[in-house]
Image (tube, rainbow, N blue to C red; front, top):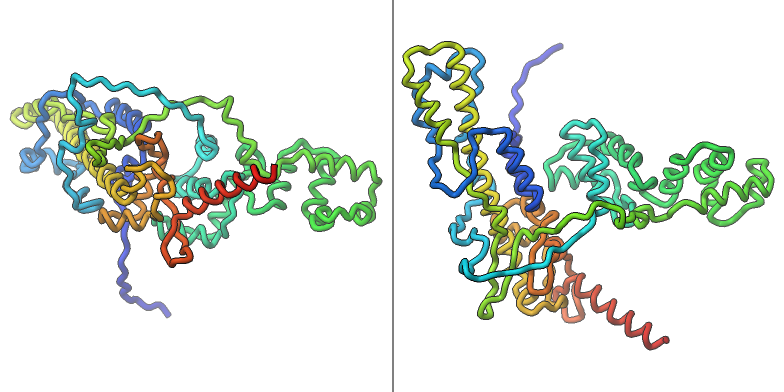
Length: 448
């Protein structure tokens, strides 16, 4: 028997513009510049330069329904997205967005820093050869980010599913995650993404050219891994009815494998990229001063020519279908340009307020440079300070660098968990690691 009933539930969905905004926030300076160039090519209504902005006032033309109601109209209403309300209510003065607070006469020289493509970035680059949906790409990139430096994925699949739902708003299931994990298993170096040594060795063997020795090695690792690790060679020969020489060749194939595929990543032959700090922290008269890289704050404005063209079409007496199509195209490009300018401005503000909170949270370290003064700090600490979502803070900290008096470092290096000491005080795990290294180094010298 069929029944009808009403079911009310709350759900949150992000619009395409909001998703694009979050992606803009995540981009480091160089990638942001590339994204900006692409937008300039795609949208002729967007111009760069230092001349005074004459922003397109959409409301001036909204009353002209003649252009909006014809069939095929696809208006983009920039007012549908309240970017400020979505990400932050903080307002940062424009002067804080300047590249620096020095006069034009001051000259500042800095040596460019070079860094190779990272292990995880190389995995992301390889994913471009796969045809994936947007959801699948988000899942597989999250999995790549969960792989440790040895190349292992040491997290339970269900934990990953829960983490994606909580931190990224990606709702999936274990079956889909396992499917995406198989894609990672096809990446180089062989064995990457394995959950344990057993799976790591199997993945590497299956990447080898099939042969009698390789097939035997796969069979041993897959079915008699425990006997192999305990070196019960007599049992293996009896189980597979093979000679000592055949077993030796199979073992030689296994010995050629790398138990830490991530450690085999050779960055010496990778393309070298220049690191461009996204922020700079300086000490001026004993006070910390934060500046945002000027390349993150381009001068953009809406094309005056496009605005005039729209006005010309508006007052035109002869309004053909071709003209209506032209008007619709111009309106879409103008709206898109206005939104992009607002999104960049919001990106600047979000980057600045987040890094400013990190700087003040770790003020003692930035004033002194001593790593033991780094406080325990997690994403939630910063998110609570600036009133942003944890995922937004994560995007700001991801793949971005800050130039300090003590060197240029990844922002995420300043985040750490805490542990209690004998006095019940919270101590950063970074401090514990540093003290442990000192003790180990001292012990090594003593033993020598």
